[in-house]
Length: 67
Image (cartoon, rainbow, N blue to C red; front, side):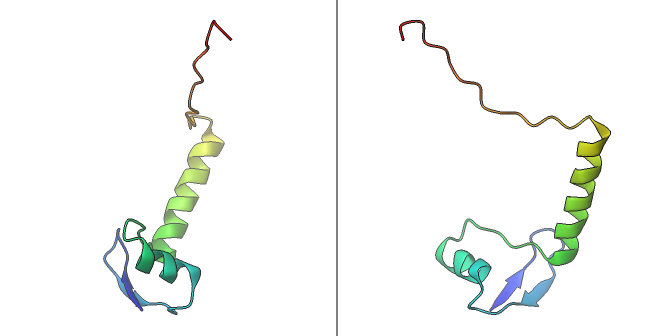
């Protein structure tokens, strides 16, 4: 199966039996990233987390006074 990276537009071939290939085939909303782009984003995210300036926003629960 041929796939295209959403960031760098590089075309690669992957095995059609891989789980990511099945997700891409059955649900077109899923996107594919090549290993280079994935590693680059992973490294930059880890750097931001370690710097202390990264905030992960969790959904806030609404408090009900009647419960």
